Image (cartoon, rainbow, N blue to C red; front, side):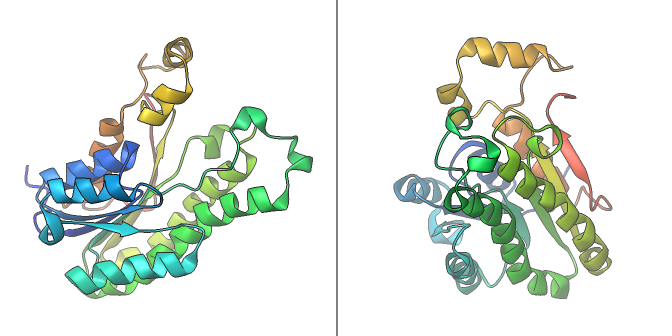
Length: 253
């Protein structure tokens, strides 16, 4: 099946590692041009962009969700190089400064720690969409995938602010679908559960991963490729009329 992505200009925020990297590679395999953003992994992002063919095929662009000037500069860079963005995958994440098991009780969480998590993971993505949407409307066929998390629905200790931001993406997508989809712009939310990224393998012992898989109907945890394939489908010509949806890729959990 031809997914209609050859030559499409795809912006994958947080496209260097984990789900973002798998998504970058999946779009490139379909013939798309991919601009992948990075926050701290400049060398890794630049190397990946070169491997995918350099400036004609792939760009590595700095991007900080918590800095709206950085968000705007990233979009302008892609527009200056390629003339626009046909597909946006809003995947970048602003983590907190401490792991969940080291956080204080909710009421004691310092403002300077939680506000960047809440604002970055919601406002940063909304501003990115706002910057690319005008051109998308004019073309009459474009796609947006907002990467949320099943923590938005299920929660866990320490996830209050992150989960609130990720839940906000669904409300945003539902409203945006009504606004933009009549002009051919389909927008959906993709929600991973615990996914076997490098971060997960490093942070969690195998016994924990196996236990979590056992609590999953499919009896396995998703891989980054599982997420990437879903994202590529939703952002392709194969998706003709799915918009405003929350799609969990977590083995039925």
